[in-house]
Structures are given as structure tokens and as C-alpha cells.
Image 1 (cartoon, rainbow, N blue to C red):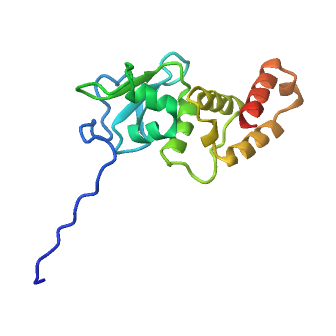
Image 2 (image 1 turned 60 degrees about the horizontal axis):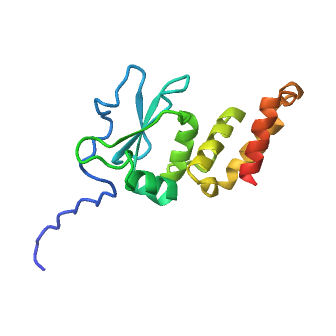
Image 3 (image 1 turned 120 degrees about the horizontal axis):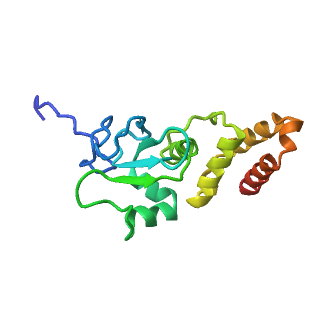
Length: 180
């Protein structure tokens, strides 16, 4: 055996090492108000959400393999013959202009196992957007049961004036339908 020193081996990365370094937003992604949120700092994919919605557009760094494993929709979209699949060169950026950035962030944190035991405090509208995205990407089943308790608390906090609005009731019914 002798006195040979063992050199620590680098940890294997689950995502492509040719991705843009963490913390650096590729030039194609940058905009005056755009910030990158590192859901997975070693991720190889940047999802850009909300460009067609009011409020700040956001870019999320994620691992494409975690996305693929989370849903058949993501698998087909990212690894099928679609424009969202990985380009031959350059950064991998997927635009999701109609996706609500807040709802998508919560969903991505669930997918990438970057989700605390306590669900985030969401408003009725944020919870509604989360459920819409979970439905869109066929991921209702991955929503943690704790989210249902969040929904119950949101509904309890609604005032009589709020519940008299048809749009509020429609959101409540949609969330209830999705959560079962």
C-alpha cells in the first residue's frame, strides 16, 4: 500500500458541463429587469418565463434531466423534435412567455427537490397559476400534500366580499378540482 496519497475524485455532474457557468446569464437571455434564479446551480438549461405577462420576467437555471424525469410533457418538449430541444451549440434557453414566473418557480423547486418542508405562502392567484402550470405540464401528481393545506388556509382567509366575486370563486373551484 505505501504512502501514496489518494486524490479526491471530482463529483459527477448530472447536467451537461458545456452549460453557461452558474450565475452568468447568457447574452441571449439578458434584459434590463431579467434575473436568473439558480434552482439548480449546476443546471444545463435556462427557462425564461413571463415575457408576455405583467411584472418581471425571470430566468431559471434547472437540470434538464430532472425536468425530463418529472413529466412526459417536459420529456417530449425538451428531448423530442421540438424547438425547445437542446441546440447544437450555445446556451440552452427555452422561452415560456405565457408561464407565470412565480407559479413556475414553485413548480421548479418541487421538481428539482429544492423545496422546503413548509410550502411557500401563496395568494389565491399564485396558487391558481401554480395549479394551471401543473396541469399544463401534466404534473398535478407531484404537488405535495402540504400544498392542499396551503389552499385550505387561502380559502379560509377570503372575505365574504372576495367570495362574492365570480373570478375568485372560479379560481377556488379550479384549485379544488385539481387538488381533488
